[in-house]
Length: 146
Ligand SMILES: [Fe+2]
Ligand SMILES: [Fe+2]
Image (cartoon, rainbow, N blue to C red; front, side, top):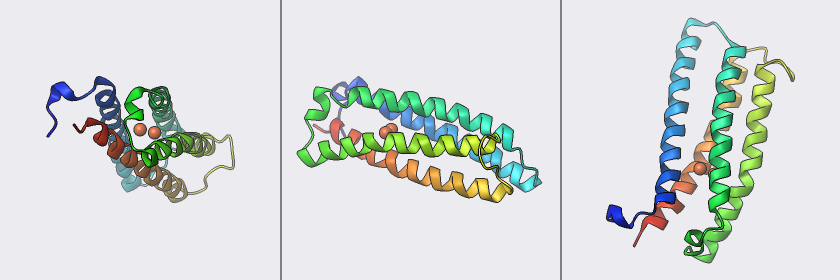
């Protein structure tokens, strides 16, 4: 285990943002599951909640992108540096995907007819986001070593 004094504040703050995003997602997943049980879809409200998530995600992505040129990242092996660049490229795709879901929930695109349809799109998005963040966590953990 790396002693706390060796952990860099930047890496820790990014890890902290991951934890907070996870909590936020878990919170509205719970709210959503309750709504599904009752069987009453609230597309607009869901759209509003996800808009909040989008804003938090957007500032998190900007934070990561600003840190990607730090000497910190240059400590990584070459293949990992490429991986960081790939992950950075994924940000725009993830944001576009989420925006598309929000637009549809808020009736600004082809509207969802069924709750299950929206749920499926969101689950697919969350799976991709989870995959993305887990890959970043691995890199952050590597930066915390020695
Ligand atoms: Fe990211
Ligand atoms: Fe991240």
